[in-house]
Image (cartoon, rainbow, N blue to C red; front, side, top):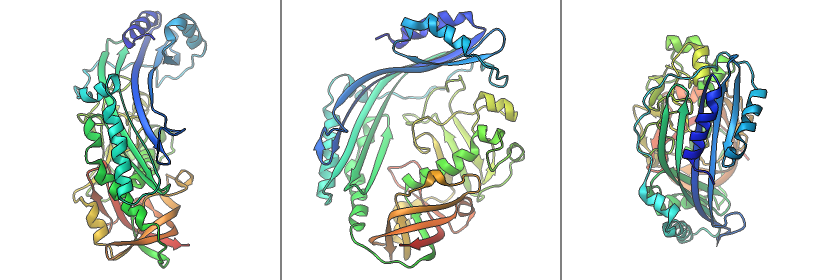
Length: 436
């Protein structure tokens, strides 16, 4: 297999025929192990090791038209033919047809040597993490465990015809568990610390699963609902990220218009921040620069409840007459991808539950993809909602929760609580609950 350096050098030489260009080449060596139905290496989680090269290329030809292409491990064998194909598929997009001037990539630490050693040599710690998840689940009373632990290391090169050549190494680590086919959780990181204190995290999931085994009664009506960070990430992705997308703003598919960002209009509670930070050392969503060459860093999308900027790549930055921003890391949920929701007062996750006299704990919903992100309205099925009374988890019930997410974010009644395992918070807010 060709190396990232070989592919990048060949691309730079071949693309010199075009007017301007940029490309990204990325390698990933991965190892993962898992458990299916409490059996190590089941049909869906066999131990495996893999190597992959991926990437993309953007070309601007002499006539101003653009082409996009994909890169894989076999690109060197067909590069001349690919160039012909890319040219034949060229299209006109004047807003996208430019290359960002060279800026120094952000110096951010992304590689943990201990994770690289697991991938390249001794994978015992991965197996130990799988065992620790299973042991914690069984000790907590779970009868069926599904889990996966994986890590990877790789090299990335981002280059442009303007002279950018950003080469960096990175590692990643992930673990996931799902107990009794009911509830699961996950962690993403770049270091071996991703698996630190994993027993406590599995035990927390198991306590909720254990409470859900018994039926509990609850009347319908307007009441507090507590959503887990996983559900919170779904809400943030569907309602906040969608409406802050530069493409949606520029194309009129967002609840916000460009002028509202220029004027800093208030859209959320005035103690609320929405942050995009892609330069956190060892952050799973961090990187030195985007594939377009824009340096990573922190961007305030909403500050003190007021709009600051959409999430903008080069094309939509030009459309909106604003500066480009860093972009959330693809393939990760909003929190792990670098998009965080914060308020001036963040409580603990435990306090949200302990102080509830009569509430519903929601750790999973159905139907998010069918909701209208622009209005903020939602009506979501909760197959196993946990009834909370006087801070105790009493049992589960089927329910439908409905309301408006933006109204909840703007309410002084809404509370948020952080834990050590998740980048985005738990959220307690009032909405309508229909039981049964």
